[in-house]
Length: 112
Image (cartoon, rainbow, N blue to C red):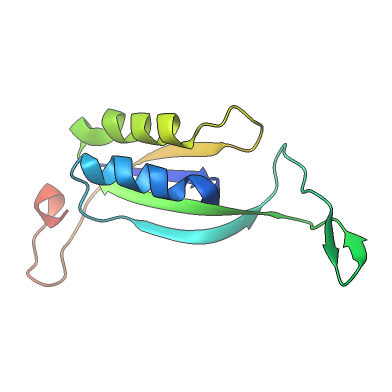
């Protein structure tokens, strides 16, 4: 099993979600994150005063899946999340050693 973490543009979340759901992914976790990278925040105005935020808002997606679905999910994230501009995000892949379903004690891939 693998855990896929992707930090993406929030504006691309729905496209990625639709693609991943089409592959049969039953669940995943996502949340709003803030970070810094090569993209610089755009100057914003608040009550007439210009300021540059210290971070850029993004969405982080976490998916635990079987080894055979990893490439398909990564392809969804790459194709649906790409704008070609700096700041499109990153994908990280980790080994998931074990999974447990609390409700009925299923383990491994059966718990997914």
